[in-house]
Length: 158
Length: 150
Image 1 (cartoon, helix red, strand yellow):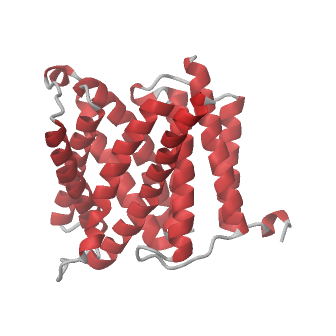
Image 2 (cartoon, rainbow over the protein chains, first blue to last red):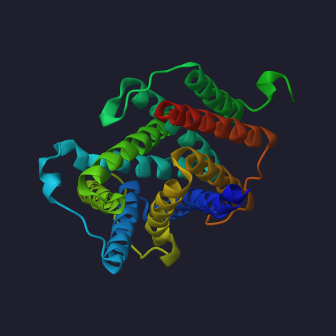
Image 3 (tube, one colour):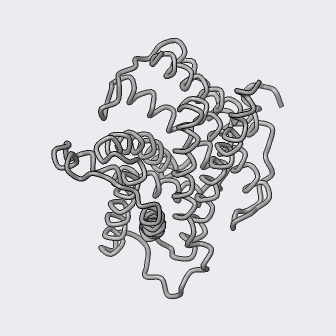
């Protein structure tokens, strides 16, 4: 029981953290409506985030070590490039479909991509092949998408 | 579903999953996930603002946007920081499932009530069922990852 009560505040914090993502979708989508540019919108989102995070790290006096970074493969620095696809994609989707549907699509695409990256052990991730559990996860994602796109009519339930 | 929406979905999904993998690797190199995130944010800002400056899309804005619309990045930073904290306390599996629950709940409330500039769309039964299936998928993936580690 003590284990559960100790974890409960962090579980709530995790749920609260999750709500920030659709909020960011909606806020960035509103900004894109004002600026009429998804690249400027996503760039500003990253820039504001970078300035705030830089400030937080300075206040916390976080230390880090550049020395091993020099010998690391070059590609590790390019997270911001693939991350840009995520921010631009989420803005475009939210503008087209609203935050609720955009969130569904992004979670679905994220799970399917994670399954694929794991299966091939891409990007330095440990290789975890498809198995029954993972196939079931993929099928649930596809069912969730089908349900969202075509509703219950397709199943003759409504 | 239009081609644009499909491309945006694929871009967002790959960007998010692959971005996490990049960030994990960079965090291991730099010794701090928050410093890795800072690098990622600067690289993203540099790339996207360059693309905009090259005139890739849109027109030049003529007026300043409403101040609250500029706060998306603050939400993003808060999200990254909180998810690192809860991930360290709960483990990757449980925290991912709880964060995903927050995502679908938040999305349903924001869109349902029409907050933050959204057009109000009340959640439907199929939307709720669909969210439940997605949570199930995320939980299965998290459980399988934990098993592989143990």
